[in-house]
Image (tube, rainbow, N blue to C red):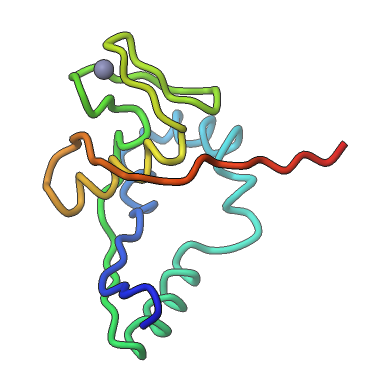
Length: 129
Ligand SMILES: [Zn+2]
């Protein structure tokens, strides 16, 4: 295996939806998630990935991803970040996607949201004028 991947954690979207009230779910899904969910099914993507990965001897499981995008890994604060960089009043900041992925990794494999040291190359953004 090229990147030595042995296990993949897949965010459990069903769990997130179950945790919201009927009224809230309707509103939230229409505004943000519905667009992303409309063209493809998470269930299908998961089933396909599971099939492909298990054929290569890799493991994949669904895990609870609640609060991983909102929770600061340094302090107990939570906030919804709308810009590209997640920042907390305690001084922590990170790229929103790295922040969420890091928290999801920590929650899944360490059982709690905590700071992980990822050394990544700076992200380059391509802009089409
Ligand atoms: Zn903080």
